[in-house]
Amino acid sequence: MAEQMPWGSNSGCELLTEKCLTNGVTRYPEMFCRSPSNLMECASDRFAVGNCRIYRFASPLPATFQYFRNPRRGGLFGELMDYCPFIFSYEGTQCINGDADVIRGSRIGPRSRCLKTRRLRDSFGFTGDVCAEVSCDNDTVSVRYLGDDVWHACPEGKRITPTGSVFRGGKIVCPRRIEVCYVH
Image (cartoon, rainbow, N blue to C red; front, side):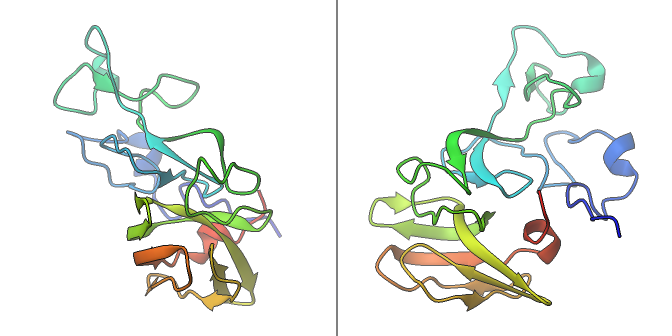
């Protein structure tokens, strides 16, 4: 049986035939970003964290690649990306072997994936999205985050409040199974 690819899954043909953003708005927020942030965010494959990179170019982009009201704004131009802005991961921000000093609040290891958060903070402030260990047994997704060695059931769309010594508030958003339970 073929493995299902999470990127673009159930998005419809428009993902490939329409623009990634129109006037700065995307129908695919898990794949494309629309505004820069200082906080870490999950890369679309959930294997790393990074930042939304949007640039201001010296001259207007070709009309086909204009996604914002300002025609000089856009993401990186690279193979297949067509100036679409996305979460760009840096060295040391991978969930399986990243640098804990770079991705604060993250539990790093071979089973770790990036999880979205809502106002999650530690003693230094808001963390942004974090890496946590993920277990995919049968139909259950469980997570184990930094500061707690207990596995917590994490049903899709629900939010859990981390306990333990690391976090001071906020929530971890439980992911869709297809986004974290596949072989890379």
